Length: 130
Image (tube, rainbow, N blue to C red; front, top):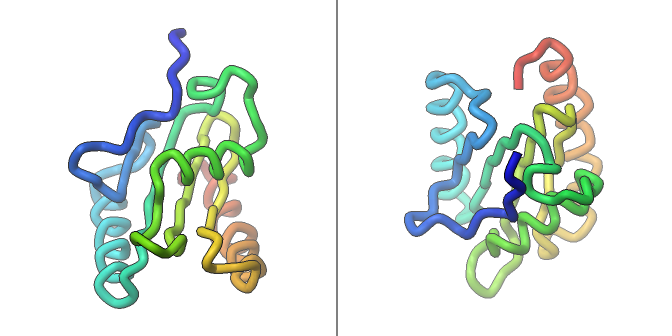
């Protein structure tokens, strides 16, 4: 297996990147619709990335937290002048996920993100529905 670094920001910045190939077409459309609505209503980019495993991008196999932060920073997610973007990163092979918020969110949405993970994402992941 060839190890890769976090890919550069795509030339045409798309908000959805299923690098693990785990999301079907109907789910992709649902995600893209939600991303568009959030951006139109609040001007907040919500980037969704799936990978097979973190080691493909970092041989040190970091924690999901540091991996998501590195991806967020590498891609510069958020509007210019504000650090208000959101990254949802799923590593299917590692069975880990992270909702990474830009610094402008502060810690005020951490409990909400934890609830989304615990009540929505993790139960679906346990069913194999990434």
